[in-house]
Amino acid sequence: MLLRDRAPPDPERVFAWLRDAWPDTPSILNPETQGAATSAIIQGGAIGLLHVPMPLPATDLEGPIATAWHWTGAAAAIATHQSHIICYASSTGLSPIELRLLHTRFVAAVAATAPASAVYVGSAMLVREAAAWVLEAQEATRNALPILLWVGFNPVTHSGRMSAYTTGMRDFDLLEFEVQGSQRAPLDLLNRLADIAYYAVTTGTQIGDGHTVGGADNERIMVHHGQSAFLPELTVAKLDL
Image (tube, rainbow, N blue to C red; front, top):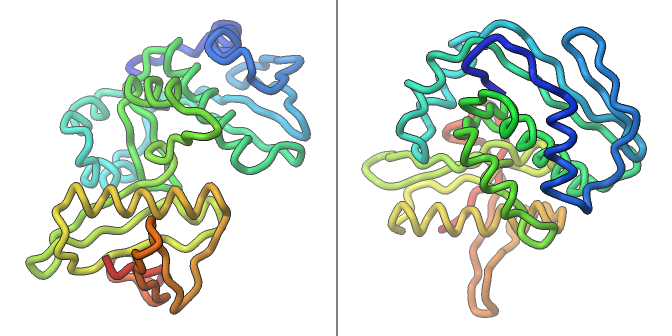
């Protein structure tokens, strides 16, 4: 969470906003604040935040800003941030999807109650406008997960044709997806890639090398595992889209 000033968040406001926005939120008990850190107990684990009164290094954000095709004002908004908040959640009692959804809502509560400009998801090399994060989190449900907040979908003009790759699938113990030299229009390509990533995340399915995937009975998209053209030294699941 990137903030426009150096003031710490108000933990009471954060947890109150979270409970008001999502009454069905799993139990969050005994929040405690010590200095810059706040933590609370959740089923099988903990959730919390740490305020760091300094900006993130610019070098950490250069790549995510460059690929933020969905947010044209990213560079200007992020350049002026003065501090940041690290939000975390861990649990052995909640499923991975339940935990990720809770964490997403917690981040939204922080963004809604602090002067936030952006949310940075380091593992997905993704930056999202804070207001957009809050809106998408509010619209998300267990049956309509906010995949665009969890996974980066990155278009590339490659050899004169459209290519694309994901970042963030590894958080779900899945291979990243990649498409090279597609004939599809950019928006269609990204939508199909998002649909397939959503299927893999929600089902926990790693599509095997040489297998196929499709959204209809007559659709067969071939998948091959191989070295990424965009993510150095990484094996990915390449889609014939």
